[in-house]
Length: 101
Figure (cartoon, one colour):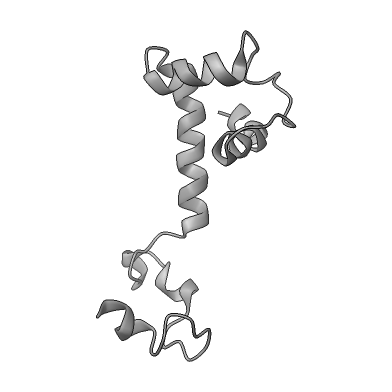
């Protein structure tokens, strides 16, 4: 029901929107709906995983990554042409951004 209020017709139609996506992603303080852009949220969550590699060594996920992907290498030194899940390749692409933190 909520989606029909904002977007009429079939989910496969790409026109006739009542509200643009950019207008929906405006903070509530600025009279928007406060919906976050998915691309930005995905990037933040990926950076949080990188942060976890360095701050939570006892995490099961960190142990798994170190065993299967890092293999005695540093996260900063691993080549980004390695094969692996899409999320691992995404984390490697975000190294320059994560390095600032």
